[in-house]
Amino acid sequence: MLDQRAHRLVNLKDFQTAGGPLSLGRLDLTPPTDEQYILRMVIRSAGDYQIPDELDWVMPLIKLAQEHQKAINANHPYCYVTVRHGIVKSKRDDEWHVDGFSTKTPHNPEQNYIWANTDATEFADLNVTFPDDFDPRVHNINHYLEQFVEEVQKADDETVYCMDPYILHRRPSSTTGTQRTFVRISFVPIEIDDILNTPNPLLPRTYTNDGLKFRSQLITY
Ligand SMILES: [Fe+2]
Image (cartoon, rainbow, N blue to C red; front, side, top):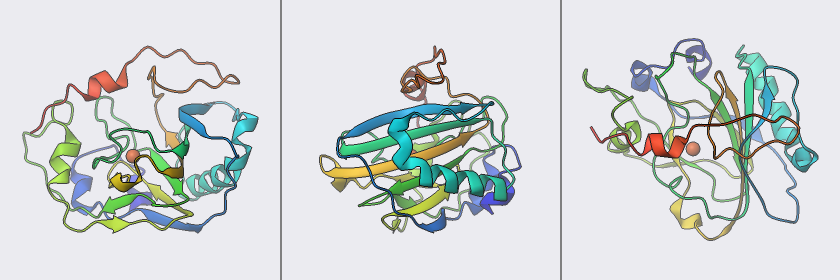
């Protein structure tokens, strides 16, 4: 399912058979003592991987994700790492949302590999048909999808899941202010140009877009 739609352009029709995330099994990661917050740090842009030492502890997840990308024959040039290790202070990720759904430029779907030590991500298995006049460049897709959530499914702790832009998910809101470790490795077909990205000193990029501003302009269908 997820491996098949990896090879066709991002589209609304694939929400009719969204399914759940793919479990890749348990994985032990040993986070550093100090807290660490990294948002979409680029570790690859077409060339070799450039991974700062601070991310050594994430390497087992990166390797597993790379192997799975190979297995499903997805060859995205960009790779990003997000780490939220410490008191949960991220906002809005406890609202139902999908990651990387965009039809602005036609492209194949990205794949995200996620892992949490505790209170892992919640999912909903959706089968949604959109009205003909729904335009994801105008309408907020998360707002539309959340009304179809019937049963909340919970991911297992310390377990790797692969998901794509068709999987609706959220951080459990009960985790706000608690101690938690979350990691996400994203394999993406086009560069994420967002000034909020944490820079990688080994792989400098110039960002100009304010992604948050764009997303807040979308209207509810
Ligand atoms: Fe997400």
